[in-house]
Length: 179
Length: 305
Ligand SMILES: Cc1cc2nc3c(=O)[nH]c(=O)nc-3n(C[C@H](O)[C@H](O)[C@H](O)COP(=O)(O)OP(=O)(O)OC[C@H]3O[C@@H](n4cnc5c(N)ncnc54)[C@H](O)[C@@H]3O)c2cc1C
Ligand code: FES
Ligand code: FES
Image 1 (cartoon, rainbow over the protein chains, first blue to last red):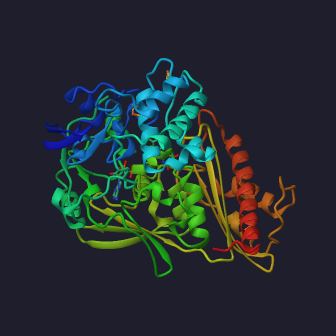
Image 2: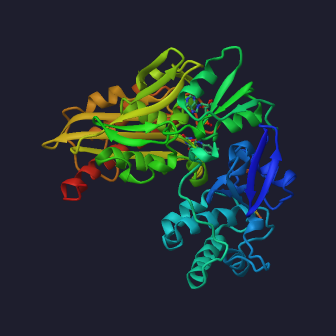
Image 3: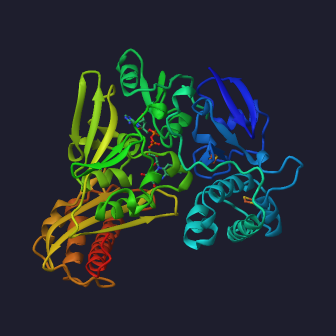
């Protein structure tokens, strides 16, 4: 089946078997191996990416479901000049990663949340709930929480240039011209 | 494992979706949020010939209140229920409490209420909610539409009254009146785990006396349980001030015991034998009823929306 997929702003035309999940297509067909696969059951969150601005599990989504949609992966966070995203700088500053396996997923989870509603970082209860989404076996979560809060403070001084409009809609029915 | 091969169709209308399901020569399966089906495909417990993706069907994401009920389209996501504004009064508050106990945000962004009912996992919060509220489940098949009441819908773990060619198009949840207080209590092993046991309660009170009680239990049997015996024990009882832990003869403690012994039918599980589950049910029913009382008190204190 032929689909059109925009990944980190770049258009891809792909001929795919319907059974292939988005995570595999990103890694194998688009060559973007920053998206990790841990459990492939929706539990660990290493595969989290943004689809039309919303953080979802790319192991639980068929690539063909994303026809005509826009996907953002960890490779799409840094600026065009390679300048790290405020979240990446904050993760580094707060030691929010050790082995780094979970990091792409946490970065995309946080990017999706901050872009659709920056107030989340200032609300301890909502931030805690957000962080229950993904697993980290190294850091103990506390540095990750601090990093997301730090990124918000930096963000308010300098909004990320490559910020996509954070859609609050899930995978909604496509508009007629997409069908 | 990776899913076995299948054909894929993304219809734009309910009619096209139903037509795709009507062909009995092929094993077709609906894909809604995919947050359960994708796991089944990965495990190859499910090997459909055709996957009918309803995510592009127009209008199925509708959520509206009319004729005394919240009408939930098949594509309304768990996330849509996080805010109590989803429905007026106690219904909105109860749905919101439950929604925050379903998985975690990225799963809630895609998973649907209708998909949960179709999936009929014994631990699913929405299945227990449907029987607690006497929801109506709207089905559309090749021969027309019908509505099945939640109490007749669930036949066992992953078994429902839905025929294979039928699509769930919507779920109807009756509104709760303003003199009803609600409570929700869940025990789970980690934040994002399925419930070991979940309990939801709605208490209607006049002049300090319970006139109607609804109690639902998730994961307390092979199907979602409506704790009718416990409910009956509460009608006419004093809606007593909530206590931190109800003493033996408190009506809420008694109702908890009845729900655990008479209504529930737990099966032994690896980390929870039957006696333990009954204990959890008794405690959680008491807590949910306390919360419902607390909810009513807050409302009569003037915080009515
Ligand atoms: C990590 C994780 C944690 C989870 N935790 C919880 C939890 O705590 N509580 C809970 O309740 N659930 C939990 N779930 C499951 C989640 O809620 C699913 O979203 C839900 O069970 C199914 O909804 P869905 O829309 O994703 O359906 P799908 O996965 O798309 O479908 C599930 C089944 O229902 C059928 N189906 C779906 N929609 C329709 C329809 N409209 N008409 C006819 N058939 C249909 C499909 O064919 C399939 O057989 C969890 C899932 C994961 C991955
Ligand atoms: S690989 Fe997708 S959640 Fe673990
Ligand atoms: S840094 Fe190792 S799993 Fe999170």
